[in-house]
Length: 287
Length: 132
Image (cartoon, rainbow over the protein chains, first blue to last red):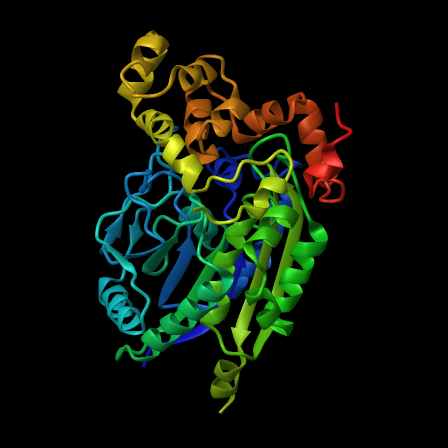
């Protein structure tokens, strides 16, 4: 049986990718950002997931306004790195896990999540920046990736509750897959930020910290946050945090926070990062 | 019939909802076309002629020609799409963010380093009434 062993929340700020790709990681502005991920890299090197499911959003790279799927699951065996206007990031191509991805698609549709199946999709910084932060700069990514792309560009984005329930359906799907795989799920994006208009630059540290606290303490409180609260209190792009709730929904009710990092600013954005381990998983390993 | 738009009360913010997406479809698809190098070159050679190939309103075309970044959003542009026009101009996200807030890039970057714009005083249009 496959199982989800841990979840990672992490921002996917494009400037972080640019800093890595242009060897700016030693610049004073960026040093604290990359130091914040040293322990995470050690953690994931030890955990060695067989597959990662990465929940992210496309930024008008694979999907224009011609097609706006609310939830799109990457079922291909390969995903090219998108050219976002300045050439593709110099990172390895992303290998998928078609067998698991198709299995998840089937399972969640029967669980009433009418997900879009995608067989051709370039992946942009939303997916590659979290991989770079967690895995560094390897010549190839250490495991296959199942991309789950969420619409957070055209309002309304899916509700926090819907995202959380989709996480639960994904967990059920993973657990009914008959190969013994250890899966880590990423929820990416956020935290508070606004990229547009005269209010650009909004950051809400209190909200972000409470959100990080409640991922382990009281996820039910997060699931109830209405869209207007994200928009008003965390900036128009802060609403990306609903994607973290898919990750949270896929974990046990009882999780242990093993690492947290929060830093302002990275470009326009509050960078948030958390690692949550399933407690049931821990108990199994002790037996 | 329309769904209520509580977010209309948020100052300095355009939520890219159904109405905006409908209004800005061609403007955003124009921006999307700039992901291809040959289209960027054609646009740079003659911006007006390139824009005339898209069924946009004259007002939309003017905001693009004038690089009125807030104006584009008002007329249906979405930031992830207009960012492609910015990239064509060699501008970063932070540079256009600074322009949209009416500050210099140095001042904007400094505000971010100091922790960003607080939500206090920036949640409701009523709090922005007395701004110049």
